[in-house]
Image (cartoon, rainbow, N blue to C red; front, side):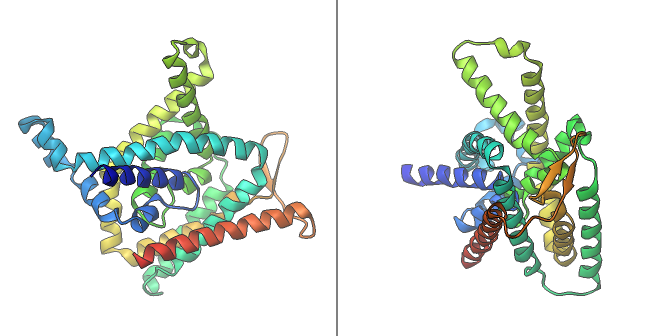
Length: 313
């Protein structure tokens, strides 16, 4: 029994780590490790009926109703991985930004390939869905999203969007955050801020209270967490219903969105004086470009192979 819960915690670690990588879905890991059905069923039980049990029959019955032990152990692993992976990502983006985004770009390409071949058929509905997704993706790619990344409402909805990747295979929440321009703010900076804050509190150091930047990042994480919890409870049911009843148009919209928004994660870009990014075509003959292309290929292979492994299960 102890080994069962230990491995469940490890699966949570893997889901959390993968879900922070743009282009890869934590839901895919749940498929691979054989816990996807339990995950969806447990999440769907967090509803008005289960809260009625909480207030009328007590916490123990509520805990049993929602399969609480499973959720607590799994998401303990997810949360633990968020701290450890964010520290690594922070260092990698700082020192090897073009290579990291090259791998992100490859993972997104791989996700596009995987989801495209999940389309059951190409018809008028799927074509309309592709056009809608393509249009939205292009608008986001060319949008100036620096301002929206700082609003509490956008951060709240970012949490709702990001959690979708935890429950829907092939749909990366971190990918959407990257396109919205707040991936680093939320998934790296704010998570690291909480990590360092907790360490300081353990040693009774409360100087962070006078640090406006630290307090801002903690506020970002608070709104993101509130959005994630809300999305986990409500959005998961909506999205799963859409995939069941309108799978063709839903999947085709996702494919179009991914195709239209790839420019938003193009690895080769320059920042001007105003901080805006300008894209450019790299010199294919340069060593740096070849290395980046290698990381793009690794990203593609990683996602495709992971999805094939999931399909076998």
